[in-house]
Image (cartoon, rainbow, N blue to C red; front, top):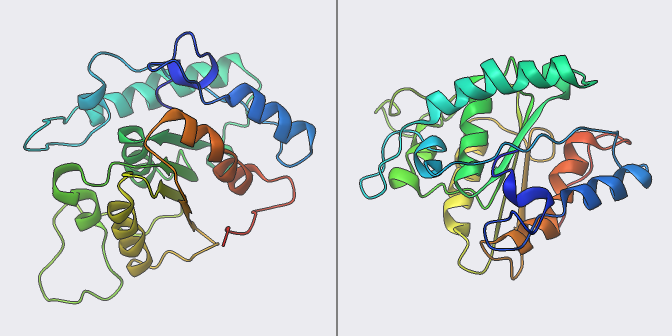
Length: 229
């Protein structure tokens, strides 16, 4: 998970509100709702916007996601697998984040389905660079003879969780990404899970209130959980 400072401790969280990941994981595991899992929080840096984004938004720049991706693949994950009692295979490995961390998660997993079988984007910033990530998703049957913007992102064997709130949280952009994935052959409830949080805003409090949804879907002890209505 990205933005590690915000996950476990309000004292280190950017706005003084944490996700409550320890309490959520403890509750879900104790209830037998999910299999025991390890959450690795990767702290962000002062270069967060650039490190979490592909190139390049006209206003915000960005473009260091490739380097951040290599840090995760070459440094973080090997260290975790050496040090902790992990199930190292792709079928046990998810990547998750919010806002820019949401689009980073989806992008990295789509490019590395050999490492990640699950990706979650909470309030993902799919507005980035004129919805370029949405445009790169390859439809099963193109509606025009014009090819997608390269490099295209075809359907890959990764289960993707998307959500957004109704309170100025980029819901329309997330819906556009959902629809693009559906057009590429993703199947609701099988490899695509979409959730709208009524009243949800772009903040840690809202993400903490619904982070259990991707956890249940990815690691549910009774198998994948149904999508909420």
